[in-house]
Image (cartoon, rainbow, N blue to C red; front, top):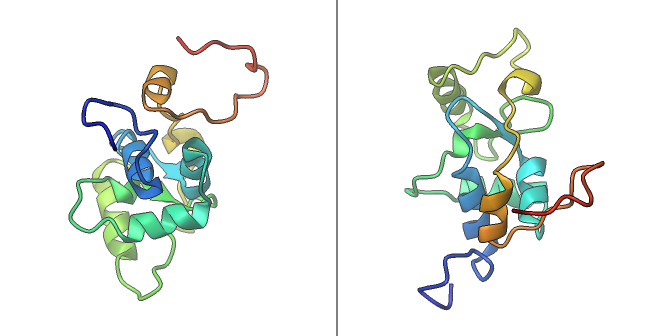
Length: 135
């Protein structure tokens, strides 16, 4: 961010915005790559995947982002898939026999509107709420 006093993420890099959104996902809840991309507004689900792969030593709950089928995505260079599943299971997330998670049970509704507004995120409104004011 250009101004240290500016508390929004408007000027942050796409990856920093993705990490900030991901940091909002509570323990035991999941988001899809597409959901994070829709909230960020300037990237694709694939870019979210690249950002998760590049987390490194940052304290970002990367394990809480999975694919839209409700499964842990295989890694390009292998490894990590079992670790991600173990981390999610330690948070209480349950996988079925096919290795899927039920988003109806474990899905995350997204950040609250105030957090979105304060941080400069303006995703498309939820259908039926187009006139809703951000307060």
